[in-house]
Length: 212
Image 1 (spheres, helix red, strand yellow):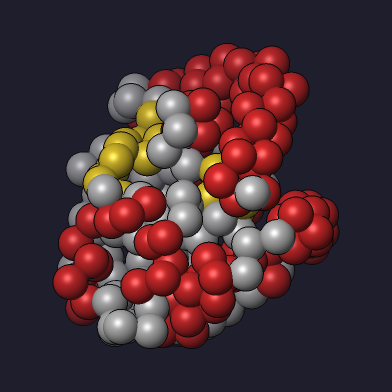
Image 2 (cartoon, rainbow, N blue to C red):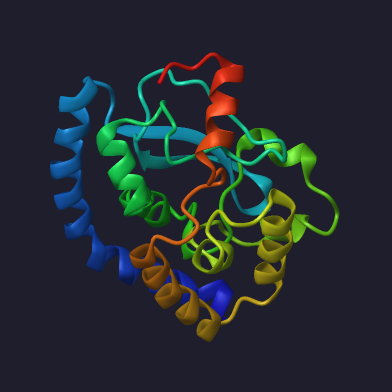
């Protein structure tokens, strides 16, 4: 009942409340993104949604135009504190999780929910194990269980297992807890990077021939 009907109502209500804030953020950070390197304001990429259907997920662009896509050994997206692909304004909006706010558009379109598993890269679908696929039984979220409680502090495998658990245990009070935990996590700046060591980040950059 909650996951099928009530959750969607809450999504729409929260999006309508948050829409004016998003418009202000779009004006401010859209201008700053344009001023820094004249590229597009939004980053759009294929992601895996409910029932494994692909959709275009929106984010404020935080990287330089035509930056290479780097992945960690476990297939998770590479990011570190000194990632040379990230613009100056991009580093700020990532730290504050402002880059995720355009996903309000995806929620309004019905492709995402406010709370749900993190949407995986389109190319990752064939890598899912049987005990991970339940993750795709619900809509992905702007934030979710793993983002709120662990952010980038887990391996890809651990994230998928916990997302699958969430998908099988969607409850109103669980979503409430995740919502408020997300706020705390963002303010504490916990688990920001998949590569926390600058030395490890430098090694990966050197191996890819990236310029600092």
